[in-house]
Length: 331
Ligand code: ATP
Ligand code: MG
Ligand code: FE
Image (tube, rainbow, N blue to C red):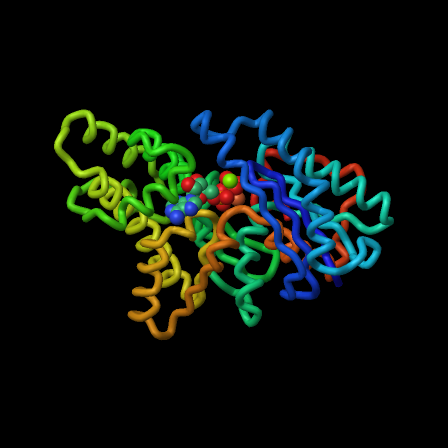
């Protein structure tokens, strides 16, 4: 099949065209970061309006690039949650319009499944069972995938998500939005010489990052002569250490030998380096993470997740609604 996909859950307007399991015909993302960074974070109304502005042009460009006619697609896959309701609705309504016009089936895709499925584009031989570390702007979870569509939640954050912690700490340090990439870059020139807390480190599989953020806030208030690069490196190490430790422990406890990392924080260079180290240490363990451009929000991952629903004839009707707080259980 050829699947056209749309992603507008937050501040990236994205469309893609995927042929079969992993032939990429087009993958376009317009980031709205330059507008939202003026406000220090995503402004929902602006995000929705920008999606509306960009979608038409982006769609035309995708078909041009793919060198196919809209009539040739097999289905339209669209993110229906989780995300900002106004932003989701723009993509959803655009998808419905296309589906009606072209008389093609509609597929509703859970954004979180999209992040996970990004790995399948790059690694075609990847098969369940596996463990997932999903680390994004709004989610931090360890999941156990026994088959392609059913994921058991092993652990999750009880407060901030990992990406959210990066963004909040970046704001504390006046680094701007989005914080993840800025801290990542700064940390490369710093040393992790400060001991920030690793909440819940030895306790089960759940995460908690708000205490780490507060500790950092007190640290910057109490001290003046620190190198901001060292603070960034120390924060990043405390957070990533915790992610790696819990994921490896879960893999060991559940006797799973395959791990998939997914979501925007999977773009973090220190996390990627640490995973390479783990891989080198454990020859019988396979660890995957998506190529950089498929870690943060994109529509190709939505097409790939849509493909799994397509081959199972799992279509939506035109009453499909946006679900801002869609959970992982809702496929
Ligand atoms: P969700 O997917 O949970 O609905 P989202 O779509 O907003 O949330 P993503 O697009 O997956 O989140 O990821 C964005 C997050 O990833 C932001 O919090 C951002 O700071 C973080 N991020 C991006 N690049 C990096 C990096 N290099 N290091 C650390 N964090 C990063
Ligand atoms: Mg984003
Ligand atoms: Fe996302």
